[in-house]
Length: 211
Image (cartoon, rainbow, N blue to C red):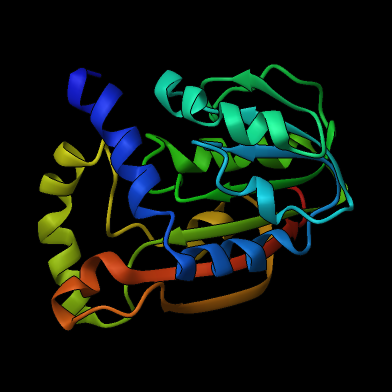
């Protein structure tokens, strides 16, 4: 990993993803959740204030000790229990159908094998459980998408493995989910030069037919 990825990137992520516009999108993504929740990429706990009353407990997967440490105050004041259950969303030590819902925000861009992680989430969701996601990724504008592909090697180096060009809805569908709601949009108001970083997805998915 290294000093930059271990210590700088979690703090940078916490700062850049705390904007009010992003908070509103977090609230939108959290709205369908309920019951026992699995959150992949818990980070500093920025989703906790937006979880609906229907959520009764949170099991968090978070690889960064710095991110987990920065969530301490939010966990301490949360109305529901939060525990860290793993470091790697690609392999989670829990029985099948353990969770009522799952949440992933700004993490599928960075997980080394997002399909493996999503397949693991699908295994862990009970029948009828939902996966909510809020992510950035590949723009439908081919000119922007071309820049995303060019910038990917730099982005991965400076942002802890983040990819700009991943097709998030396609990854979710490829793991056996049916995307039942999807909004594509610029995540925050920004100049055109920021377009490679700004295209995002807010969606809800359910497990489809067996793979």
